[in-house]
Length: 186
Length: 112
Image 1: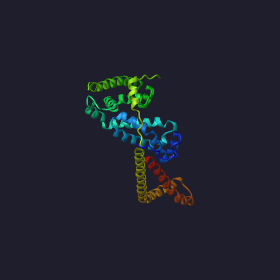
Image 2: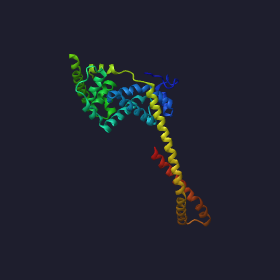
Image 3: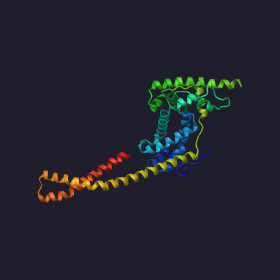
Image 4: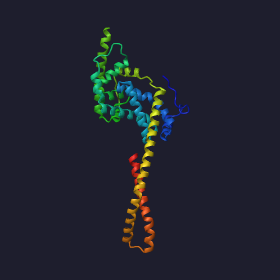
């Protein structure tokens, strides 16, 4: 895995300055933002989508959307949160467009293969949650957002967010325990 | 606001948070950005060409119509013969300019 910065001069610059340059139409500056933020966006979408290649496609869409809408970003310091918001919207659009979660849920095995890694276990278990619950859980546990921040990011009511997180976490633990059982015996 | 999290789950999510970054991904995004810009530029040129062809056909008709409208306006204003002659020369052009300005703005709003 390589991770060279697209422009050496920009590599040490503050993100706010790079955002300002990108807003002025500097492609190299935006490439630097992609370089810096791709891990954040791709990890979030991988937890949400379960499928790494789909997550990467959605991450690309997220950055392209950000490039198109960058002139609308007022506070340069809020780029990270703004990008997360775009990623969430892109993922929700994908869910609504294809209703993929119903297909994924139907295809899921009831238990994981015994040699499956921790990531597969968690992602498989996450995929069994309803999209809104999955989103709340990922934003809380993966992104470390507070319930209030999740409510603001998703547009859900605070009570709904709390309920999704409490029930989702319980369901997730139940599923992960169920996956552990077959490997415990072997 | 205090947000309580299950420590076991929190640990599991933390263990999975590893950097996913490669130059290939950045290059793909940049390539798609450039492709999108090329397509947008091509669309803009085609739009301008169509607008110019349409204007070449529509402008004479519009100018005649506006001349007629100007004559009617001048007659309603009841101006002196000298004034009405000069007014009948530049009023259609002014109206055409206003129409072109309006069209350009509407087009810009549509393309945005």
